[in-house]
Length: 57
Image (cartoon, rainbow, N blue to C red; front, side, top):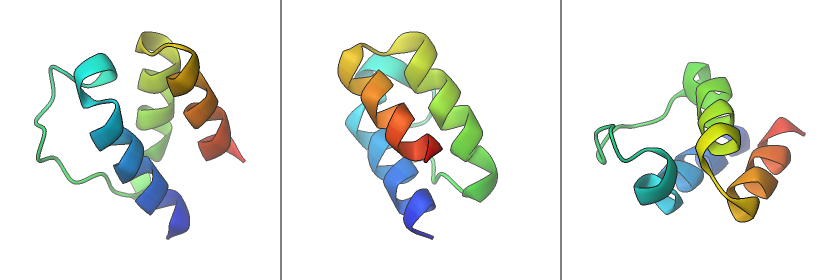
C-alpha cells in the first residue's frame, strides 16, 4: 500500500500541473497508479518525471 500512498501524494502535489482537469478530491486507488504515472510523465516537468520514476520501482 506504500505505492498507493505515494501515488495519492503525487496526485495532490502535482494537481495544478498534471491533474488540473480532474477532481482535486479524487482518491487514487491501486488501479489508478499506472494512470498517475502516465499523467506525471506526459504533463509534468522534471520533478514530476522523477516522481513517476520512483512510482515505477
